[in-house]
Length: 237
Image: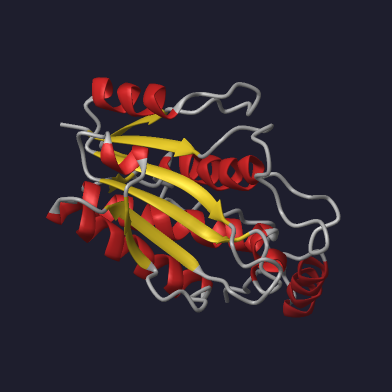
């Protein structure tokens, strides 16, 4: 039976206030764009595996604000085995407060949710090094997405959009790649996904004889000529 994943990029393009601090990022990059970039990379990496079904519960264009209840209802109706919400944080106020945070429900999170939380956090820290200085990086909160889902659920805050430490890191393509690879590694492990078989290549080798010469010197001359053209050759006595 396929392992069902509900994946969502938090917010939408025009959610008020959800963007990088201007003094740290003149472009004021929107949180939705950062979230969606990683979610898209997760989707793409998962295509290298079998044994899963994926539902995106957000609007992947970022143009439409999908309510939290619509997202969790969709995941529940899908009967997902795991729900993952990707976000970026705020609250450093331009300082150096920073780091990745993984969140589960604060009132009765299942043992399975907590296991997902720990494995995702550890994989992300190993991949990115963005440990930061959070007192509770493995947090428990009363958030809709981890409260109203009927399956194990984790909400990730992948760095702070108003941290002088985090902003240059979270804007980079390298960081997004590292996060996606870490997330997929945990999905593969815990979801029992299997890598797709690599295309088989022929084991046959075809040899071409280019000529026979009465004098070894002529054969050596041809070997040299072939070498100059980038071909390997041997002389058989």
